[in-house]
Amino acid sequence: MALLSLPKQVKIVEVGPRDGLQNEAGPMLSANIKANLIDRLAASGLRHIEAAAFVHPKWVPQMANSAQVLQQITRLSHVSYSALTPNLQGLERALEAGVDEVAVFGAASQSFSQRNTNCSISEGLARFEPVAKAALAAGIKVRGYVSVVVDCPYEGAVSPQVVAQVSDQLLQMGCHEISLGDTIGTATPARMLDMLAAVAQYVPISQLAGHCHDTYGQALANVMAMLQAGVSTFDSSVAGLGGCPYAQGASGNLATEDLVYLLHGLNINTGIQLDSLVKVGNDISHLLGRQNGSKTGITLS
Ligand code: HMG
Ligand code: MG
Image 1 (cartoon, rainbow, N blue to C red):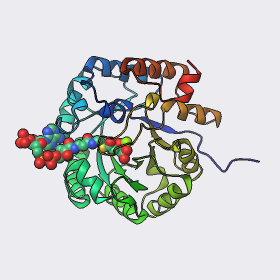
Image 2: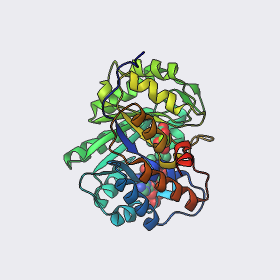
Image 3: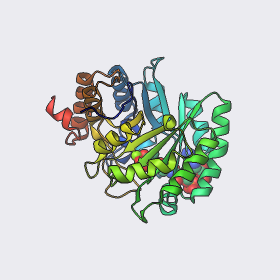
Image 4: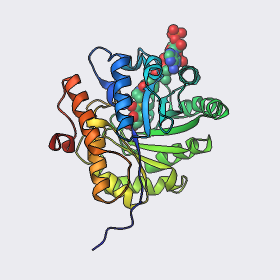
């Protein structure tokens, strides 16, 4: 028996330094520690690293030193260092810090959009338009996120049609990639694929990414389903760090180590050295005083 067709190569977007660390309750990690984490992730073969977020520091205090983090990393020319930019003010800060790519982030439910960005879905999209325009004019690629693509922590089940419409608008404004966020990790493969089918009516599958949080341990199952549907970009977080400050109970993203283990086992090339990555995951877990959230990481230690 053979699996349905799978991509030969998968792009992994490492979101640990942003999605992972943004939720840490303790004092802000120093720029030096974050830059060292990012450098080690790059050294283990990750080529797309979401390094920072130029959001309001009162909303997400852990990201307040984003400019210093970007200043302190040792840049590798083949690595893209990106950051979240919710508005023009965020974009200006990001451009000044020399990011390679930015990301705007919308949602598919009104309540989540309000809590996360203090505006409605359409107000958020209207804010992103000039951000995308200015970033593209500056020669910077723009990624678009859609949060709560299956369930919202405040409103419950989300309509796939709304996800499709928000994704379409992000594509129309020039986003090269749309990352579909199962923010609270409640999705199971059939629901994920229903949502994907609706979005794929508007956005080519090759421009979609899966962003699975692992709250219910479903992230790898959802990745597998999306892989078979043709998605070849996935977001993950070293040691499964993270959560979302505006989604109570949401656990970290799928651990990058577990994703890499799956992909290599399927003979899919990632360019990542798993043993180096495992060491990075162990070290950051130790530093944060957390249990490593990657089963692969624990097993290979
Ligand atoms: P706001 O308060 O509505 O903004 O926040 P405002 O435009 O009314 O301005 C109010 C003040 O904020 C002003 O300062 C601005 O200068 C300042 P004041 O005049 O009062 O002194 N301000 C800023 N300061 C620094 N950087 C900025 C900025 N913008 C305004 N960029 C805003 C609106 C969007 C800024 C705020 O709600 C915010 O920062 N939200 C960020 C929330 C966030 O980062 N959430 C986590 C990331 S998203 C996520 O994790 C989901 C994802 O992983 C996918 C998934 O899992 O689903 C991507
Ligand atoms: Mg997330």
